[in-house]
Length: 268
Ligand SMILES: Nc1ncnc2c1ncn2[C@@H]1O[C@H](COP(=O)(O)OP(=O)(O)OP(=O)(O)O)[C@@H](O)[C@H]1O
Ligand SMILES: [Mg+2]
Image (cartoon, rainbow, N blue to C red; front, side, top):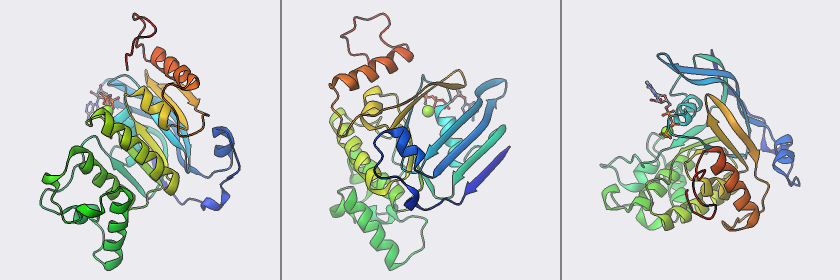
């Protein structure tokens, strides 16, 4: 078992003229490398020898039935959980955003964003900038209890961004939000990732979210990746674009959704 924090080469190596996901990967430094990673809880095997590479700036979305080990994989990448075997190579700067924002109720919004960081003028300025990026500049002095669910989750995003992660881990970050807020948050995350270029692993049950955001979609099942495909569609992506619908149908079929339903029925 081996977990290493990798010193990453600079972004200058990135090939900016590349058009397909595979070409972009070839021109980018590695952010994550998993080799033969295994994890069990008692006699329940969850990850059975996972291999995975994610490059800097790559947006990977992880789908999979409930209980297949998505959160376990994310926890391994965050360093919260040790693997039973295999090698985990991750960057030192990594942050996690969860389904719930996990704000500290006794701290105002700005302090929540900079929590755990050295107190300085620069830290405050960075936190203000991150809040502006998530369109919450006017909420710096608000208390968490006064925020809407979407606002609180945007504070959590600002808190993640301000640490300038090389790896951003998102575990169903929009699952608790209403449909409209969820779409707005997806756009926001897409924009922020395009600007900051961390490697991203986003866990979701929402197939449309995967097709909208991902450079690459993985489906975890039976301890390994049943699907690992690039989504080479231009952005912004339309949900009803025929190519998007084709990816959607493929993923839903793999997830076993809609097998017994008429093809036009929305099962996501
Ligand atoms: N700390 C733990 N102790 C024992 N079993 C665990 C622990 N953490 C996870 N498991 C088990 O490992 C399996 C995978 O759990 P995990 O939370 O990774 O699934 P998931 O794919 O994220 O599911 P969901 O989509 O419901 O969030 C489950 O069977 C779960 O009960
Ligand atoms: Mg989970």
